[in-house]
Image (cartoon, rainbow, N blue to C red):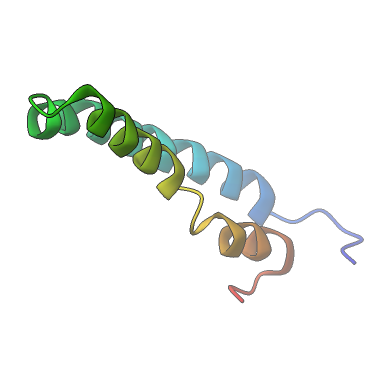
Length: 71
């Protein structure tokens, strides 16, 4: 258990916010051009998947913020 503050937590939070903002902007900019003509239900499923993809690396990232190790 950590007893002293670490630089990884504020840096990690700021990094996470920056990466999520960039990811959201990229999706908002390019996804409609690619899937805009597809059926609404398919578009909805694609956006749900894209909205959940960012969660995949989150566990390892949070572990790094707490321990300094990626695994």
